[in-house]
Length: 163
Image (cartoon, rainbow, N blue to C red):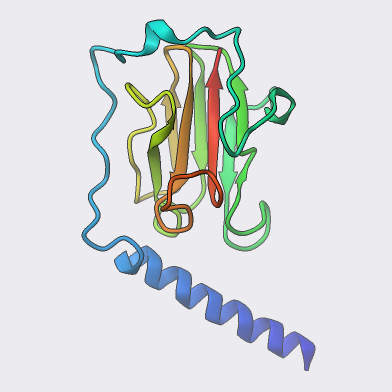
């Protein structure tokens, strides 16, 4: 009985995710433009050695290192509605791979947190993998366009700290 209830709950959640991915959660909402090819106006202002507390990563110890992949999912690993790791520190010039369903969790660069100008994250709402190069130092915030649309870091959101 319990297994049947869990199976039914998964089916309902999958239907909701498919409806959101089919445009229900972001219908009519345009994806942001790609990165500025000339470079960010505020890049010279970012000191890569100086930590900045930006939600959802308020402490330097929150940042993971030693990986170049941010995973996100619906069922399984990672748990639903999270980026793993949500706080990632990389060297400027490194690439980061975002891996998961962009149909269910469209990726948006923050327009209010971190290094806004020249955020290389761009926007993505199709596919399951995107490789992004972080050429300049900065705190590049991002969020899920469905589950973090407030862009305040309180829900499905994260930061790439390029040092």
